[in-house]
Amino acid sequence: MNTSRRSFGLRLIAGACWAGWTSAIAAGLIQPGTDFPDLAKAGLEGTLPDLKGKVVVVDFWASWCTPCKKAMPMYAELHKEYAGKDVVIVAVSLDENRKDYDAFLKKNPLPFVVARDPKGKLAEAVGVQEMPTSVVLGKDGKVASVHSGSLGDKARGKLSAEIDGLLKK
Image 1 (cartoon, rainbow, N blue to C red):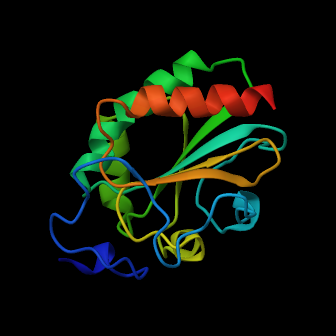
Image 2: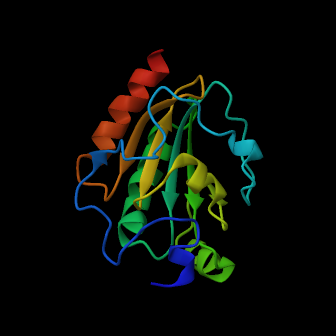
């Protein structure tokens, strides 16, 4: 395992990405109902839109994480589905190496917001321990749900249902 995979404290073992999508309430992982760190103050590289009053899906990923890369088309579909609505997808890369990050985005342009957390400060504050990890935030900025591990076939439907419920609040 190279340094970029463990520098921010993730205890990843090769192949440790979970086989199924689970609600993650692991030790140290941010909990539903709590405030999410302010993304504008998180020291991320990249431009973030105004997120106030919006449902936000924050996906922690990296170019070296196969399940993370497999989830990107699903997030692109969600982005398209909720275009013009108060929903923002923010993919936060944990790639330390800027060249790996840039190469991935050049080969796979993403239609939603992408930022980089090269030192893993936000991931550490959130308590990310598995890759990928997604956090869904309500319009109030509070954590509505946390999902960790490989996204299965039913993930898009689950996320859509969660987003729809949060939009109605």
